[in-house]
Length: 335
Image (tube, rainbow, N blue to C red; front, top):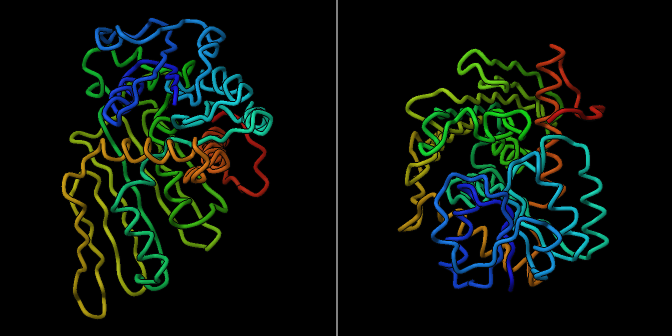
């Protein structure tokens, strides 16, 4: 297959290296030339700065890895050209244009995999198994926390100029750390309503650096979600509490445990040997290969990505208005 990678920041570079590790070498790059990362490792690959010229290479698949606000500018023409798409999350910085992408994919006859790679995490997959087996009893609440210090993310660049810190590029902690909006839906079902508060008081950026979100699932389970760009050391955890047990998953650990209340015992699931963060991206790419070959349907579809996008948009709407957002009637807005 021939791959086009749109964007060559840190995630575009990761995808390039992973494609090479998986034996793929027919790769074209589309880039703005604005990245401050060295370019020595792409000297052997065609590089274009114009989308039309990049698509003239007739790629089978396009990996969208440019800044969030620019995703659809590449994705829609690529879809119309019949390319399968791996779209980094979130889909965009707005709900505007998402239906155009959906129509473009239908017109081009291709599919889209959204890059919420935590769906490939063995710990979260095990939790999904436990939930499906009612191992926790009736779920009563869930709490998720994810905080990381933004200035430490990319030491080679001024964090204030990164996409994560800029409104014009689709940044902000709600968009950039949007993974929980996807895996909470994946694990617990749809969100019925939410209320959110956001703050810019930590780093004084033009986007929010902290968000506190309370969600009520359609199952009536209350879920709290905290996101921030400030926590040191970083922490990403999910806790589920049920009538018969509880689970605490901490990203970066090598196992996850299910506490059985009646037996007062903990069932421990240990991840496969060699598992690390990049394993998620490698497994995502392997799945994407099968999607491109029409062997599998996307584990995280465009519709899943659109549902997560509606939640991020609802967070901003709630924080802006100070009101609870009913997801059934929410029309959309800034994401």
